[in-house]
Length: 263
Image (cartoon, rainbow, N blue to C red; front, side, top):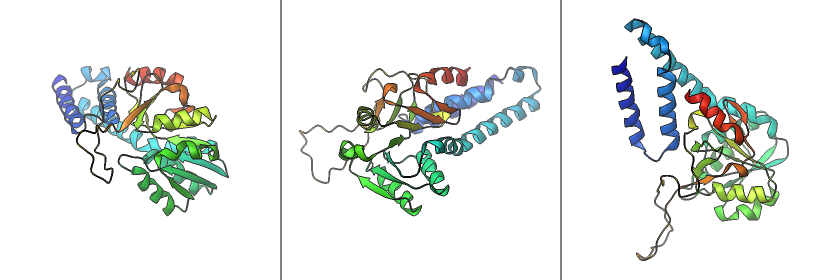
């Protein structure tokens, strides 16, 4: 069994190297390892039985992960009401599932979708919402404060949910949460539990940077320094609730859930 754990660890490390900056990938691999190998019964079973148990637990983990977005989408529906305006940032598959479920439930709402620089993923989300006949307005990222007064709530995804209850997500999430908080607008996070990471950043620079190229459309002089970090950290005090497959959580209880996940 020790040899099998070593091989699983090698496979996990190889996946992490594919994108060393991805918090969700690292956290997902770590949780998979814990979930699959944490049963003590493996030490007392014959090889075939232990193999079957490992496969069963691995498939169960995959099943839980696949169902996560659907569970989150259903939990969030009570918070989306007819006539509301929702602001989203960039593209998030789980946020799209939340909005798609609301649209399929015949709820009437509109969405303000930011462009999502540097990779402009908000264009993708706005296209997906248009296909669902959801009224959507595309905003440049710097128009967040300008339009926040017309917004009822903010929905964002997360690359990682950290021990403090804060989130690490695409650049601009922090400033959106700051503006929303200052104007008493709720900020909801939709994130799968496999994105819960054993990290505790203290500030914006206290994490490995995720660098992305930025196209300004014009040549940039070599003497001009360009900020290429593609994500930021939003502290928990600016978040209202987290919708997860573990339930609807306040930021303050995330550390308790992390302990349970990694036991």
